[in-house]
Structures are given as structure tokens and as C-alpha cells.
Length: 186
Image (cartoon, rainbow, N blue to C red):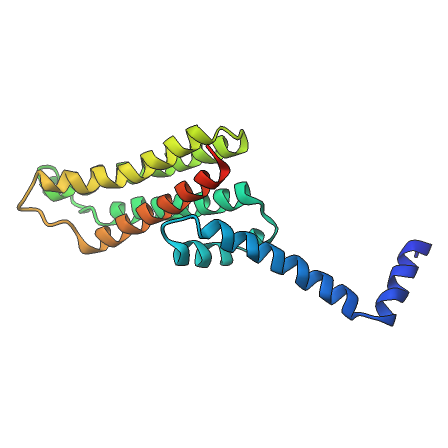
């Protein structure tokens, strides 16, 4: 053990609360950044609970918090695309001319595009091209709208309630990201 490490070890033995206080102070400061950032979004509670669920948020800067929320959006959009794929009939003949099947397939595709747009926004964040990140996140939310609007063209086909909840979830996540991007000053 080097002399420096030995002295740190002795200091810890003499007063371990010094290190505990410093750690708590560091975490409290990071919680403050999360709270301050989330106050600038339309959905404070969603922002806080989402960021608190990711342990890396405690060491992230504002750009990192945006990236965490974008990743949550990617997961949401991908899960919705997968969910929609599982709702398609397995019989090819029965599904061929069914409007509901066509709409679900189109929606699955749109949610896939939403995930791609959010992945592009991660690249934009890394490059600090926040205007492009804003555009990609807005596009991701719009893909969910396009899915919903597709059902309006077929009044006899009901828009699934579960899909409506997923749509709203993705749009709220995107709105949180847009609020964080506003903080970054795109």
C-alpha cells in the first residue's frame, strides 16, 4: 500500500463520517440538478421517476439526463412496435384484406420509425446539435400521432385502448425530452 493510500485509510479510520458526508453532499447536488431539470418539463413527476429509476442519472449532466430520457423513449417505442407485431393474426389469408391488420402493421412500422428517430437524437445529443435532436424527438412523437390518425380513416375499426395508453406514454416521454432540450438551449 502506497503512503498516500495509507494516509487516506488512517483518515477514514479516524473519522469515517467525513467520507459519508462528502458522498451524501455529492448525491444531494445531483438530485438538485435532476429536480431543476425536471421542473422545466411538462411532466415533472414522469421526469423525476424516470430519471430516478436510472442510477447513472446521479452522475449525469443535463445532456446526460436528456440521453437517459431518450433511451427510455427508445425502449417504449420498441416495446410498442413489438407489442403491435404480436397483435397481428398468424393466418396469412385471414389477415390479407383486414383493415385492422393493415392498421396494426402500419402502426408497428411507425413505432419502429419513432425508435429510429429517437436513436438519431442520441447521436445529435452526442454531437451537441440540439436543434436536430429536437427535430428527431418531435418526429418520434408525431409517428405515434400518425398511427392514431390512421384509425380515423376507418371508423368501423376501433383504436385499441392499450395502444392509446402506449401512444400517450411515448408522447409524454418525448415532451419531457423536449423540455430538457429547451434547458440545453437548442
